[in-house]
Length: 223
Image (cartoon, rainbow, N blue to C red; front, side, top):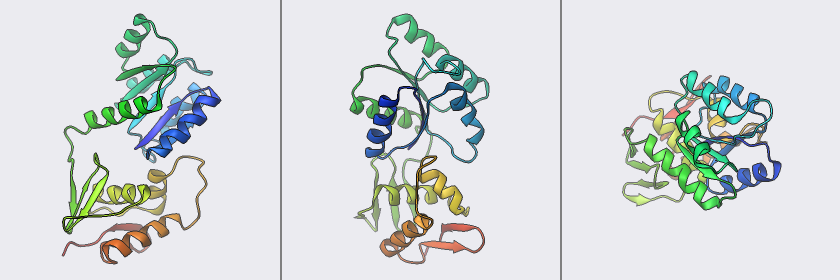
């Protein structure tokens, strides 16, 4: 899951990037409200599945950011994460378009559970099991099976496989794959995508993922 995080506290931000990353999230962290709001311009390149938003931000306060997102038609779930704990503050945030509210200090495990719950709500009307050529992937359970046999996949391999399955019939460029698997500014080897593709082919067969010359990669034809 790719997360847009707006938090100006360096200690909390560092902790969330590391902690959420440990749970399989890819986090893009912004400390300034205006910069985070402007990140919407990148949505076509790097879509987010959920946003975590602090209210007390420099440049542009959190509620203004939230209002701007909703005016622009961005319906991705937003969880407000703030020290403001009055009923009025919570109601105000929810009325302005937030989907959930968590008060600081908080437990990381609760934040993770809430983010996954928001993702599940958003996926209610979407396909929950992805299938191709004998492979079945359950995004919620984070598990894949090939011919009914459970597969051992790394978090990145699972994310890449889900990306390819959700774009069946459409080739994806290396840049598109990188933007979905890695956070902004995250250092990665120039051949990172090729390495993941190679490992998946070893587990699924060379024909499962085909190379589209000059474009990138897509799923191969089902047998």
